[in-house]
Image 1 (spheres, one colour):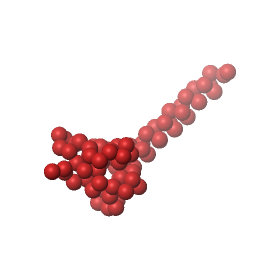
Image 2: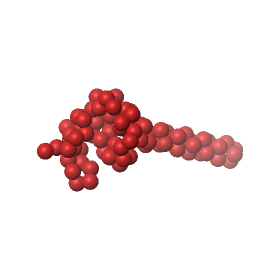
Image 3: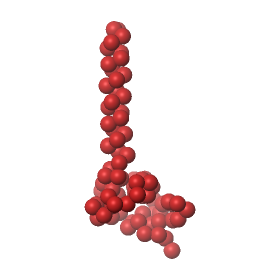
Image 4: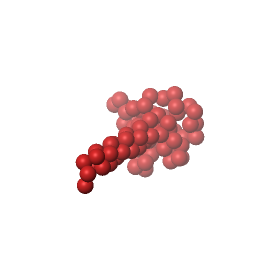
Length: 84
C-alpha cells in the first residue's frame, strides 16, 4: 500500500474518533442520556449543571443503577437528588 493512503486512513480515523468522543462527552450528550433514560425531564435545566455531575448521573442511568456517587455524596439516579 502507498504510504499516503495509510497516512490518510489514520488521519481520517483520528478525526472520526475525535468527533465521536466530542459528541458523546459533552454536557448536551449527558443531559440527553439522562432524559432518554427517564431519570429527568428537564433537559434545559440539566444543561446548567456541572459536566462531571452530569457524567456521573448519565453513567448511572445507562448502567440502570439506583444511585450514583459524586463528590462524596450519594444521589438518587431518578431525579438526581441527594439520598437521605
